[in-house]
Structure formats: C-alpha cells, structure tokens
Length: 497
Image (tube, rainbow, N blue to C red; front, top):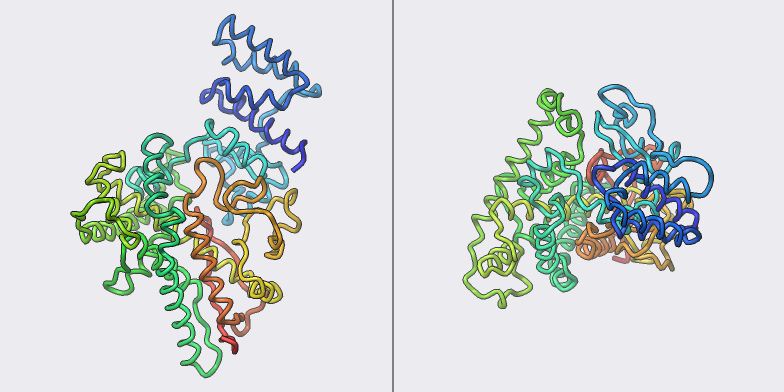
C-alpha cells in the first residue's frame, strides 16, 4: 500500500469523525496525535496553535467551525474538505433501492463508482461503507476507540437476549470478561488442539458416509455437499461446546445447524424497525417479525434443553480437563466466582448461541464456497491437492490491492508471508482490531482438516448437465453470505485412497 493511499485513508476517516459525527466525538489527544503524524511538515505550527487555543478555552477545540479553519490553513491544496460521497437517494427509503436483491454485489458496484468510503442512507439512517483494506484498518485499529460498538438490530436483540452475547454486546467490562471466558475455555490454541479427536471422528464419519453413497450407486451419485458440510460444522461445534450431539425428532444436529444459519441471516436482514421506525409495523406484514419470533422460540427451546441436561459439577475448577464441554466449564467457574461476571441463564444462552452461529455457518459456508470454486476450476483443484493445505480463501476484492480479485486463485497464497490473524494490512479474513474474531484457530483447524480429507479421498465433479459457467453461484445477504442454492456435487473415490 502506497504512502499516498495510507494518507488518503487516514484523512478520509479523520474528516468522517469531525464532519459527519460531531455529536459523538471531540478532539481527543489520541485522535489529534494520529492526525498530526501525517502532517509533519506543518506539525510544529499546528501543535502550537491548538495548544494556545486550548489554553484560551478547551471548548474551542470542539467547535466544528474552528476545526474547519485549522484544516483549511494546513491541508494541502485549496479545496475545502468534503463529506464522503453519497449516491442520490429517494425520500423515505434513501438508497435502499440501489442495493437490489444482492446487496453485497451492489455495494461493490457503488464502491467502484464513488470510492472506498461512501455515505448511504437506509431510510433516514446514515450508513458508512468502507471498501478498502487500508481504510478498514484505519477504522478498526488506528481509530478503534472511536468505533468500539457494533450496530444493534432488533433481530439481534430478540435472538441474543438483548444483545448480551459476545458479538453484539457493547465494548466494556462485560464484553471483555465474556471474550476472555470464550477464548480461555473454548478458543485458545490449547483447547483447539484438544478437540482434534472430535475433528478426526466427525470428518471420518463424513468421508465414510460419502464412500457408502458411492458404493450403493452403480452410476455416478450426486450428493448435497452443502447440506453435509453444514451438518459437519454443527456436529463439531456441538460436541466441543455442549459435549454431545443432540438427537430427537428428525436429526437435531441438522435442525440446529439450519437454525444457526437462519439466525445469521435474520441479524443481517433489513428491518423497518431499525431503519424506518415509523414503518415498523411493516415487519409484521412482510413476515420478518414472525420469522424472528419463530427462530428465537426454537433456539430458546433447544438451549433450555441443553442447560437442563447439564448439572453443575461438584468438583473444583482446577480439575477441569480437556474433554469437559464449554457449558460444564461455564457453570463450574460461575459457581466458584471465577468469571468476573454474574451471568444469568439468558446471558449463558446468548453466549452459547454465539458459538453456534459463529462456529457453524462460517465454517460450513467457507468450505462450500471453496468446493464450488474448486469444481469450477479443476486445475486449481489439482494444485490444491498437490499443496494440501494453505490458507482459507480470501473474500477481499479491492482491485488496488489484489490482482484479478474476483477470480479464484488459491495459488496467490503459495509462498506468501500473509497470515490470517489480522496482522497484515491487505489480508484479514477474521477481521481487525479489538473486535477481531476470537475463533480463528478453531475455524482454521476445522476447515483445513475437513477440506484436506475431502480433496484427498475424492475427486469432485459437477452433476450431469451442469457446467462451470451454469453452476449457480448466487449468495444470500447475511452476516455470513452462504450459497443461495446448496452445492450438489458428484464424488469419485480416488484409486490411491
């Protein structure tokens, strides 16, 4: 990333803070320092001027007009700083009509036209879209104290017990202690390694099931791989978090996997209540409110069953071994007052749901998209088999950062120094800053092991009548975009397997 690009990203975010969010942020020392370091040429003059102004009256620094004058004096060029570009909008609905039925792709089109920082209006509510890697890092890392909270939604409040989970809770003591609990007792390197037996057993069952399907059919057998991958991800999370796979009417693990995906879709869906409160009644008309209530009820019933079946252990927390599940650990640490929080049952259910939503749909969708891309490009599949196994496929598509960003080129990561833990300015599949996903190790271990086995034991082909060009690659609009139509492929056992 060039110095000019970094300069532009920092300047854009700085102007966003002072011109677009005046009621939320004053000129704090940390923000001032970040701003000044990119104006070394005029730094002594600006520091002296601001110091003198502060000595006169600290409130002067909060005056937008005065800040504008200071910027005009020292910004390069003669033009006045402008707010982020905003596409034309319609009354009431704002820019909603421009997002169409595939918002992820519509936002890419708007970014190419208007730039890496755009101001949209969903109804009357302003929404800022950041699409460059450098600007994303500026917002989530350099200026993270100015953007600490995630936007709340009505669906998230209903599904996650008022947003008392790890994903949606506000930054503060509760969030820090909850994150510490999840990392130390479920997502640490030690705990992830201790779950290797679960990954081996569940992936082994998946491979055996696919082999059996191939043996039972004389001709090529077509399987719903998307369905199997969702079940695999859910079974691994279920055993790690709850200690077992739950059975009941139908296949409970499949039902929970589907519910987790539905919860992810609902929290990312448009709600009139969130963006146009005066029209909140339309959520009932469209059926959105009913879907949220139905999903919430089903999830609550399942999690109540889980909690009822876990007795609070009578031992000491020091006796916790690697095969105790997450629910047991929570109750035991809570009993001994070692969490630092007084968690209610609703809090516990919200945290458990986090683990399912974040650990099921993300991994399943990643593997499904990878298999879809690989089967469309057999040469890439051959190289992937030869190099088992590198990094998960990146979703970043900034043409200024990546060569041919919309093409599936897994070989771009071979012999690359890029990691997936948010340390690189171009590549951060698990996010950035204090809100970075704490489950990176858990997900990477699962995806790598499952994909390595699927590619090692089987060759994969498209169903009869489907080509690389006609395979449906449309996605859902959700927190985790999944394939709109589940992936169906034909497995062919490898002769050397």
